[in-house]
Image (cartoon, rainbow, N blue to C red; front, side):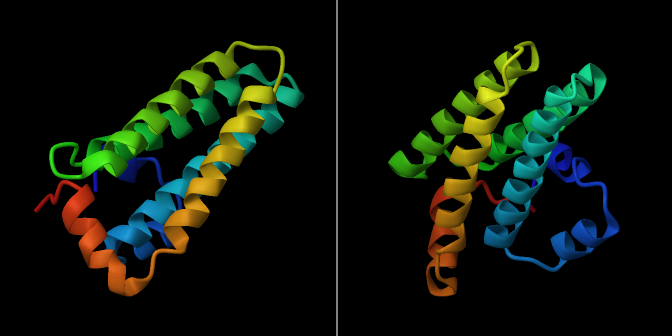
Length: 140
């Protein structure tokens, strides 16, 4: 996975799981970390803690950028293209949310990403290999 996305994980548990997991599991961990960062940004925004909002939003943006960089747009077909567009959409909304007085954008991004995360979680282990080959750039 991308080095920038891995740096976004701060706990030893996530780092340990990252080393022993499949690409599908990496994606799920990245989704979980991004969802958590968005949730924290929303909570900080409610309390009007601007620096904490910025830090949490930046963490979510870093993870989403890492997710985008793993996509193989040349071979991943329409699913990879749609995921790329989805990640870009979320990134634009998060940037907008960071400067807004409402938390609606944070809430929407958290909800949308949670739905896509659940779809990834539903991918069976038998299908995982094909998903990895078709959608992701394989880094050695």
